[in-house]
Length: 265
Ligand code: DC
Image 1 (tube, rainbow, N blue to C red):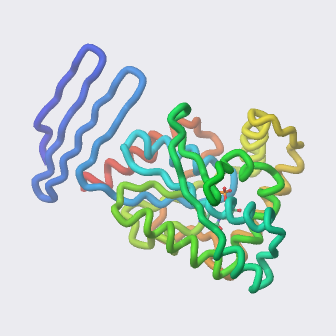
Image 2 (cartoon, rainbow, N blue to C red):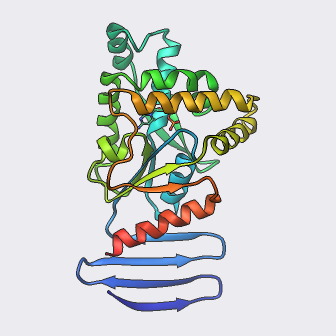
């Protein structure tokens, strides 16, 4: 591979590298504030890991910088949990699961004002509601049910069919996209995760004690890692990223560097 163009501008500089072997064209343009990476060969990036270690926000920023689609698979489980709560259905009763799945429609839409992707349940924007403690307390149970997982996994695979996707969750590298070109496993110590989650909730006007958040995270880690259906595991070919001492931009940069390696080699 040879670097064929190196350009430095007033505010923007970029370089273009050509890999003739794989006809990979890698162009990187750096602006003063934003950086975008355009790749000809789009890949699937699977990000798994424990609750609250910043998977979604990191995945979202990585997708933005790559011009990829970001899919928050946890939001789909959360919307399903909310649906079951709204209809007073038990995910543990097979007849309720059938009713719940039959009337479940989840979609994502970009909010033009914020530029952020939001989750819709049967046509209603539920982005805020699915992040409340009420839903967090029920979602792990919903995610243990085989039929629910089968339905959501099928939808996720459909969304990633054309590649150019960053998806985060618990079973992305193991079940949803076992052939993903880049698999990451994110971790962080529980104290750090609880503090970050508390700030997120405070920003949304929900006051929850650190202890309550910690208990919820530990409980979800326990259920997610020990359930019989697609438990959270670090697959052999996943690269672990411990975010406990990393800043947000360090996390994003580490992943972009890995993407660069995978797509150029
Ligand atoms: O990523 P999150 O915390 O928003 O996910 C909410 C819950 O959904 C989490 O406790 C586990 C479950 N989940 C899952 O089982 N599989 C996924 N791919 C994503 C989330």
